[in-house]
Every structure is written in C-alpha cells, then in structure tokens.
Image (cartoon, rainbow, N blue to C red):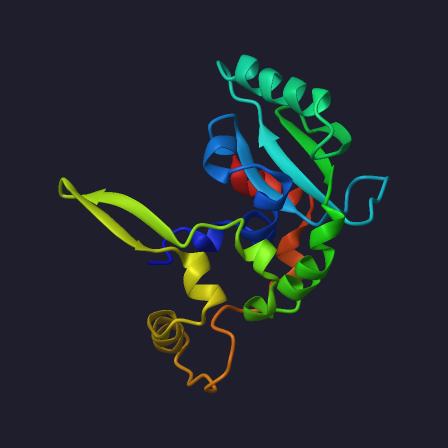
Length: 189
C-alpha cells in the first residue's frame, strides 16, 4: 500500500496539486521531487514550493512546452527558475494563498484538520490493473485524511507502536527531507 512513498517528500505528496499539477504528468518531463526551500540557493522565497527536474535527453521539448505554458499563465505564479548543477533545473512557485493554512496543518501533521477545499484537490480512489483485473481502492490521501483503520493498523504494525484512538495516521514531515541541498543530487543520479 505504501510502496515508494519513502522516496518522495511531503511537499511532493501534498503541495503539487494546489499548484494545479499532477505528479504523474510532471514525472514524464523529468520531475524528481518538491521542496519547501533550497539551502544552497542565495535567494529565499517565503511561501514557495521548489520543484526539481532532471532534463533528460529526448525530453527537452516536452519540458520546454511545460515551462512555456507556466510562463504564459498567471497560475501558478512562477517566482524563479535556475540551474542546479549541469542536468537539473529548479522551478520555484508561489504557494496559493488560499491554502497557506492547510500547508501549515500538513507541516504540523494535522491532516484530518485540513480544509474541505484542500482535500477536494486529492482523489478518494485510485485504480490499477492487477493480473488483468481492474482494481479500485481508496487512495492514500483518503486514508490519511479520514484516519482509516487499515492505514492505522499498517502504521502500528510497521512501527511496532499502538496509536491513540484519535491520533493522526500519517507522521509529521521530516523538515530536513523537505529542504533541498546538493547532496540530494548525488542520491538521484
């Protein structure tokens, strides 16, 4: 159920959709992860989300098309773009003001307290094909927002702890993982 989620940041999980993007589509043009800031960049933006891309050979046109569409639109507001090393680009977007309270709640690990408007950005269900059969199941977002029993049990068994009755079932983000630094480039090569 949680396969692969250890490699992506909380910023990727929760802050891409409020920008109007879908991670799956961004991955096709080299998206790696989203961050709250970049410790190696000399300009600091308040209430921004940093999106790291690796421009892969043969995907330059798709990335340029995406980049041009961002520049031509008013939303989301692109604050900055800069090279990170020789193969990577960071795009910095202003996080939508209407969801700043939700952003703080995510960073505090209070997922069940998120606004209805914020939660509506995320799917309740996901579909996948297993052995030729279409499977429809609750999404990780639905499970987190609604503190489902199956996710609670999974977390308890994985961590070897017993959660309180009203506990959130998803952890507080590790802020170190949410701040980009050049060491991250070594991990994605």
